[in-house]
Image 1: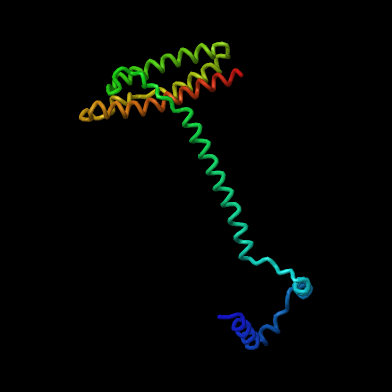
Image 2: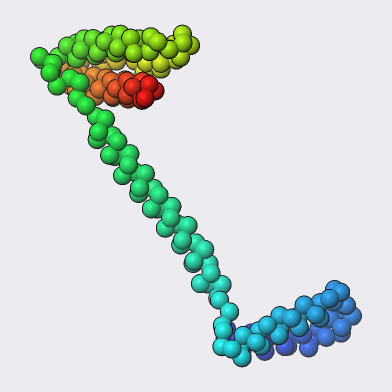
Length: 188
């Protein structure tokens, strides 16, 4: 349907319902509001200022926030990747037998013990409550009700077990490293 068809259809509908429409009285101030809008439209046509189309306004209102959101997500993901790449240290690189899951677990337990000692010494001058807060955080990172190594199936090869145990405990030790850095920053 073209615009002319729409106008003709509207005129036809108005003519058919003229008596009904004439009986209804418009709201108070309707004529003034209509004339204000009509005058504004006539002024725009005289000065060749076309009103912004709803289509353009919609796309501006939609695309700008979407673009900003995408930039924000991209920036945050780049930052997180940078932080991860800086944090991911391989704590098990010097294990004598890297295919032995028990050697990896022993190294993990030694690192955890050293971390408790280091954090306890670093936070010794704090109040008991502050000291305990750091130690509780360390416990939340390292404690487990059942060691990961005991939950792996027996039929799994030691090489596969070692890789799983290495990845699992390496992530935990990276968390411990982050906590150690937080302790250092706390005193700065």
